[in-house]
Image (cartoon, rainbow, N blue to C red):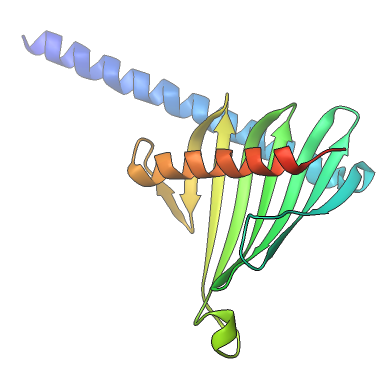
Length: 168
């Protein structure tokens, strides 16, 4: 019985270890692709669009594309109680990375001088259309958690909305 338990524990540990190694390789590849997109940014065709209906105070997106398709979307969203920047990165037609910086105001815009109360940075890494890593601030969020699943849904939905507004 002990041998079976030890063997089972070993197989579980080995499976988790292999999954973690694969995820780290995927993250490294995503980071390399994002760096390549950033480096070649000036070579891409840039299209700026105002996007209606995404945020109360306005949204503007800059689309970076090449003959091979969409490479990056850099968006600025303005709300009554926040402003945010989002950068979506694509490999082929697939979303691979999203960086979000959210600045929350002390009080709504119309209530007085705009001051930032907090800043939150979020990094989401995607492979095969699925979120593989979520980092909020300096904290890595556990896969399968409510926060992880909500972030996956939210970023894919935002990406789809921005892509739908892009007509080169």
